[in-house]
Length: 491
Image (cartoon, rainbow, N blue to C red):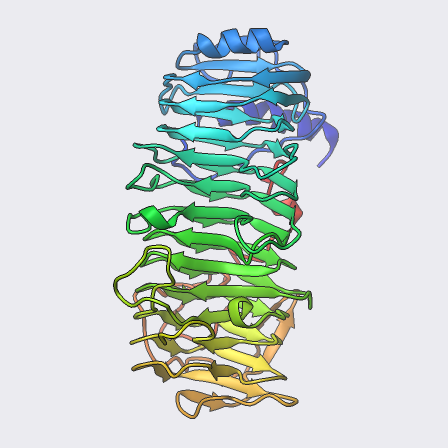
């Protein structure tokens, strides 16, 4: 795209940003560092008021006086920021606080807390201050096209959503990078009894968090133990995680009914952990270890989770960091909320595992093996260890329709529910898909109401193919993400 087209897109972005409700899909924006400045003629919406500010004092005044439909535009420069209290836009007339030029209005001081507010958007800012950005008891707050690189000297959460009656907030198309102290990039909390609900974290680029800590350094934490029995309905989708090495749990889910989908994890130590809560789904994600030490996939505790359509390749972890760990528990159906709750009725189907050190593990840690779970219609190809590794004997586990293809010193590891046959995978770009004539085609042992598409977003028709891929000529909707697909400048 040439420079003149970029400038046009930048002007369009201003309009789209202020007229799109938070509950809609991500807008197709094009933001660049040299986007042209806003002028009075670039009207975000009909009858909107544009307030231009160029100092921290002016910003404070503008935020105190903000009303629905107003756009506060920050000129290039450094700013200290404070609270936005009880300010309410609407879905058609949000309050917008944005940089005149992408990334050139820099928040270097103060602390933003959006308190008891709604329909407010912060866009295009660079954040280098040293305080947590708080969204408290608010809804439909949007943080988009921002660059977060906070200044840390000790433990620091960068963004936290908290308080009673928090819901439907969105964090999208941002860059988070270079976090080296304890604390999370994003923390979704709530009240003392209820997690914030229906929040969306999408199209962000998370990179370079570490070195490895034993706890409290996740890229994203959703919920926490004391409120883990509440329903979150949080969606984490279409994000890129690169070198996120801070915590054994890259994304830690600690409440019920959340979804982690369509993300790409590259050379990141740790795993997506369903640490507390029940009824969450992890599907359509791409995990690439690149041979890096300690890279993992998905770890599961609790009840009624679904793990499907994921692609795991080149991961080196085992135990907590196995490609898929249906782990043991240290409490059963009651006990301390901070404990590891026994797995019941996990469904792990239609995933593809290629060249991982440890693929599907059952019960690597703690004393209580999984119960009443299903591992079916997965493809596992590897050259070392047991492809299906029962470290504890599960109770009433069903294995069905899986394909295992051991090479080198590898063995299948279980005696039922697996066909030892070459699935004829063909590498296309980064992803292993089914080749023509694969014995996985139309070979699934079961059908599932939630399995309407494959990892590519292509339709599953008739009897599904085994593994994450459906042999298809349909359009690929979901693919492994790179930096151009996420973050500030992505569509």
